[in-house]
Length: 217
Ligand SMILES: [Zn+2]
Image (tube, rainbow, N blue to C red; front, side, top):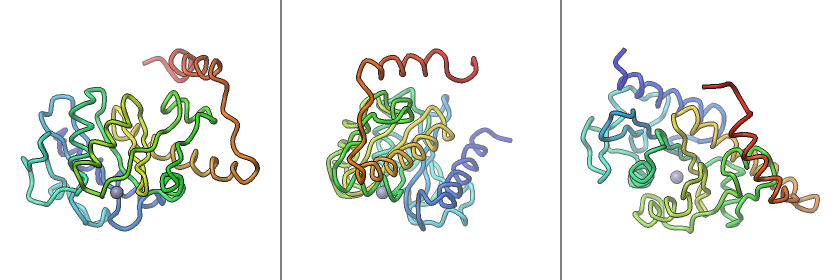
């Protein structure tokens, strides 16, 4: 199968997976991805149900936010995706959700501290909160990119989460990790609040994930 068509299908599958796992509701959230040799990226269309999407509904957008493939109106957050993908050559996919616990923490403008190994594996340190700006605005795109920096996850104040990865599977995993960490963070606050992992042990853990975890590529 054509690689671009396969990528569009994968974007739709990810949308359905997010919906089934409760990370998005209705037509909420948005997903983008690109292949290494593409000069633009694919993104979900605005306000369409994931389960009814067809590959032709996925649109191609350049880094100025202009439509270059397809006919649908792109997700209103296409500038946020464009900014991140333009600034981060290491990123192949961006997933934005409104998952419940992460949005609760983001609405309190609280970063999720590095209190779980999964948080360290995702971001090396805490998961920061990007300053509030209205959905779909250029300011939101700028705030999200600035706060994300070189991390894999960022919370959007009063809004949701953005997870990035080398591919779609990794970006989804980041969003799932943030949601679970946010849930544990909130529960832990009921019993006195999470105790951060000591800084020197964080460095050791980061090194461990880098050199020892998983299979050789
Ligand atoms: Zn949103």
